[in-house]
Image (cartoon, rainbow, N blue to C red; front, side, top):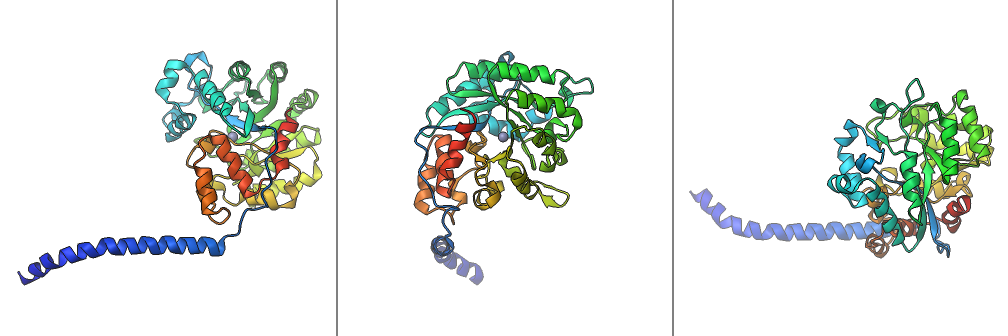
Length: 376
Ligand SMILES: [Zn+2]
């Protein structure tokens, strides 16, 4: 009785005390955070430079399709039921229902419109995505998770003034060489592939005619290297950069996506396996798309400060991932001031947000310019 009376009496003062303790703790923590940020603030990875005067070209942009409107796009049952699909569609600013009504071409129109609103980026290469090929050299739908056909991307980008066609061809297709000719004739700027997803080995000698054709048609090869986690499964050993000696020796211009970040082979980081190759091959490049993502912290610093990459990096965004929670200036409290972070976070256009974040972190002018130079 006495106890409970004490409790009855004690509870109002305790309930008054708790919010006060909470407020004091939050203040102390944020003050501590501010002090820590100031004490440990190391500034950008390199001294920021002004952006180029002319608008930039983003050489790494994705679209998505569910097959609506006879696009020919395809996603597997596994991918369709994956939580990732909803996030992707949301980052484009659409929904599955809207795609069913308007067709997959709607996404391309949305990308084009959003890009037209960018102050900094004027054009982008929109990438097709080939699938896995069976023993007869035909598309194997049972093993393909995402398929975005060349014909769809070529047709839809041709309707815009700011999107360029990035082809994708599994080199084991029986008509791979004819597809390369077709892509070039339809204004493809490059060929993109992901060996770990499309399940082929870039070091396979049978690909020699394909590589020779790339050289003949002056089509750069944009290849994924390192780990790949946008799909439900991947054979990461096929994305080992050391498998790229064959196309490099044959003279193909090879652009290795994202400095081969996050993967490892034979006990060594893929980035470390790629870096020494840069000195050997003048036709080897890399790019900085996705390097500001929270799962890749540290890689942009590496790209901007390690001597190997200097003069070899291109600007790309990996849109729509720049428009998801994976990318935020708030992941850089030691590189950017609070004002910078708030300013960048408030930028509405995803390309402008991406460019201003990268510029503030020290991406130099020549990196922003190189994409335009390579794809005039
Ligand atoms: Zn990508």
